Image (cartoon, rainbow, N blue to C red; front, side):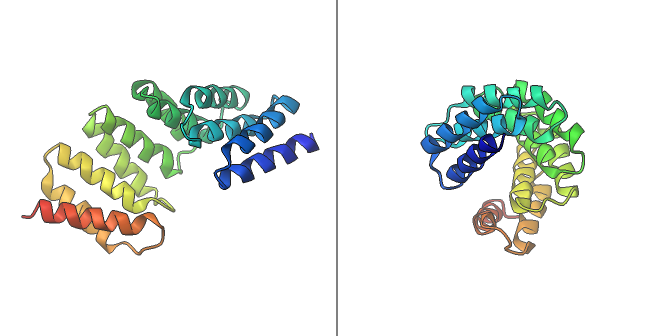
Length: 196
């Protein structure tokens, strides 16, 4: 058990350094030693998800195993849905995002991610509803991106004035995260493109 945990921690450390081949080796050992540890499967799935090129089918298999082992784990469902989205399975991802939201109703990530999924499916009214829900939950990070996603969905519905308000909000946010500067640049570009 202790050795499996050490392998897991080594693997996650390798992921943080983008050393995916080494991460896979450690995480596979952790899973072999302790096959019922959901977080070890999740870690291995993350490795497959982030490696270049990504192996989304392998990531999906690991995330599915994680939620089988821990069926009320919001992060497991969120990662599973993300991998399915990236693998071109947006329609199937919807139910997993919904499950993540059921198990973590105060976490903005499932709502914002489900909004992105709905936008990809061109279900813009649903996307707008989920983006607003995610923003209401006050995301700790990615707030600027959430407003940009909402503006994009509003623009797709031809609600240009509402989209402009979202871009303006982005420009008022304090630069607390690395994504802020690029989000602010995008907001400025979109405001210039869609002048009143």
